[in-house]
Image (cartoon, rainbow, N blue to C red):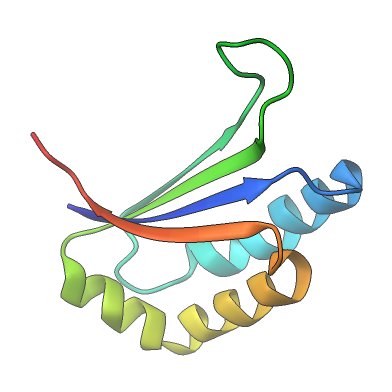
Length: 101
């Protein structure tokens, strides 16, 4: 399995971020062809105590790199990317990982 990982820093307005993320961005992203599973984790702290650097983590699972590439090239993938850059471009770091068993 391959996954696209989106790691978000704390937004200035968490309520507005959550409203957009969960009601607009998430539903757009869930429609990407080839997406097997999408897991969203709200970061609640760090082991050192305190808030920590990150606010939200999203993991999007695909069968393989080709499925991920095709999904990103699709109309839904392009819509998700455009929306992401519009509301969280300066907050997000994107990574691609491969599960190791």
